[in-house]
Every structure is written in structure tokens, then in C-alpha cells.
Image (cartoon, rainbow, N blue to C red):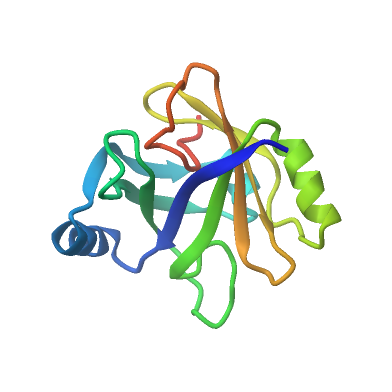
Amino acid sequence: MNARFGHLNLIARDWRALARFYEDVFGCTPVPPERDFRGRDLDAGTGLRNAHLTGVHLRLPGHGAHGPTLEIFQYDDLEPRATKPINTPGFAHIAFAVDDVPNARDEVLRRGGRVVGEIVTLQIATGAKVTFCYVTDPEDNIIELQSWTAALLAPSPAASPARSA
């Protein structure tokens, strides 16, 4: 499997306030567009019902214009921190860009991980498409496996679940 770092996701209680914190304290910079996702495909990919999330990507400092991002999202419905579903406040998952999401998913499962949601393909406002799924590692930490359309040549600031149709 060919893999590389994708992004780091943080689920917030107030994404705007938390994004401002990372901008002010660490010099992170917003990467438009802001995200606002909901719909059947998002539900399928996350394993949640009536999921709705909003947020932003912040370019991490020190890596240039195409460096990694911190994705700060907020779900309308949040679980208490004691549980670990995908919409739990705090660091939610680590993402890896892979060349083949189904094969990567199978490899994670063979190594002791479990399924969180289905494999889905979503489209963001720019027209780019991402195929992704959530799985866990053997200790139940959530991992996103993702593959972007060929039209996206450089590491994407939008490396996360996208707006559904």
C-alpha cells in the first residue's frame, strides 16, 4: 500500500473560536472554502444519522503553501468525551491518503482494525471528489483513508469529507 500523511482532524464544540485560537497562537492560516456538509452520503461515510458538520482547514505553519492542514470541524450533535464515535470533541482521527481506499481498508481490518462507516465518494464546492472511509486501529483510534480525484495534483487543503449532493 502506498500511503502519505493527509491531515489532522479536531472536533470542536465551537469551531470558529477554536480556529481563531490556532490562528492567533500558532500562526495557522485559513484555507477556503469553509465546509458545511450534510446528507445521505455523509451519513453513510460517518456511520451517523442526520450528520451535519461545519468548519475550516487551517494551513499548519512551516510547511509552505502546500503543507499539511489542521481540519477543525463541529458537528451539530456531539457525544460526551467518554465515548469515541467520529463526532466526539477533541482529536478525532488521523488521515492517510492512499492510492486505493478499499484495499487499504481491507489491510487495516486484517491488522485488527474495525469498520466505522462505509466507503463513499463526496464532492466539495471546487468540484474535486474524495473517496473515503473511516476505520479504527486495534486500539479504537479513528483513521480516515482517502483518495482524491486525479484533477487534484498537489496535497489538498480540502483533504476531508466533502459536501454531498
